[in-house]
Every structure is written in structure tokens, then in C-alpha cells.
Length: 257
Image (cartoon, rainbow, N blue to C red; front, side, top):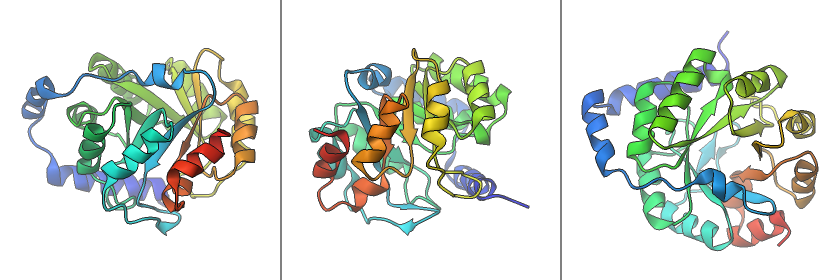
């Protein structure tokens, strides 16, 4: 029986097949990619940091916001003090596109995370060509060989890597690949259920020399404080911000500024 994650990956592969060009031709485009911005340094700044997400829809909630101009939203996030902008580039379930990332990257001066289901070498190279500074690798979607190979290629290209986990077994795998930025996603990607205790259960297990990120389901200042107490250095928030009438005010509230 297929899971939601299986269905998403199947759609990602179809989207990729429709847009991809020869790998050698893609590699040629690397020479024109902009200089990489240091996402680790941005998240390592004093205090709790925000990865603010440009997100139109989700598999669990459906349409969230139309976002006519993702660049405008990204500029608002940056002005409000976000450390990194996350951009969904998956189309079928999240309503994103590579064009959104291109628009955002040219509009802000802070690092940009490509949020997608990276499952091929092509996508890693494409991520750098698009101008992203940080790339997501989801442990649940990859085997250990893929995780290591994709991380090595990302680092070779200058990209930072956010490695996402959902349970203790996945966390051990992330630590085994020496991930330096580890995100704990409270949403089970196979069922889409939120498990609020994931942050307090998993974040303390991550060594203190890593950047620990709390992802999904964050909508209140109380949740941010609980994640911070568990060891989070940053939070990744999408739905709460895109649904807020004033995303800048929402960021200030969540960060307690």
C-alpha cells in the first residue's frame, strides 16, 4: 500500500521527466549560478532564527494562499528578520515551481532554501543552477547511499544541506552521514499526521554542535518556546505566515521580538 510520500515522489519524478535537459547541458549552466550565501552562518546567529517559507498549498491542508508575487512575500520576510527563505518548488501537491525560487533568490540578500523532494543527482545540480544556497534532503525518501552521495555532491557545489528526520531511526542515519543542519519534522510524511512531541523527543538527541531546526505545525509563541527549550536553534514556518494578514507581524510574534 503506497503512502503519501510515495505518491509525492512519483509525481516529482513525472515533473522532472517533463522539464529535464541532458545532464551535461545542465552542468554547463553552473558557471552562471550566483555565489552561494552561507546558510549555516545565517542560522547560527544569536537567538532563535526563522526559516520563513513561501508556500501556496500542502497535501494536508490544500490551498493556503495564492501568493501572486513570491518575491514580494520573500522581501517582507527578510525585512521582518527571517534568516533564511524557504521556497517550495514541488508543483502538484505544494503549488510551487523552480520559477518561484528564481524570483525569490533575485529579490533577497539572505540565503534561500530549496524545499523539494530531492531524489536524483539531476535535482542536486539543478538546485545550484537555480541559485539556491541550501537544499533539503529527506531521510525518509532516500537510502543511506543516496544521502551520502547527494550531500557530497551538494557540498562539492557549495550548497548547504538541511537533513530532515521524523524519528529516532532516521536521526541515527542523519548523524551517521555527519549532517550539520538537522531538521525535526513533526509531520509524518507517510500519513500527514502532526506529532507535537517530536520536537521535545528528538531535538535533545542532536549534538549541540549541529544546527537544530524545528519544522511543521508551528503556529504559537508557546510552541516556539517549547522547541527552543528542547534545543532548537531555528524554526521553519510556512502555513502560519502565508495565512497571516501581516506575515511580518507573525514573524515578530513567533520570535518574541
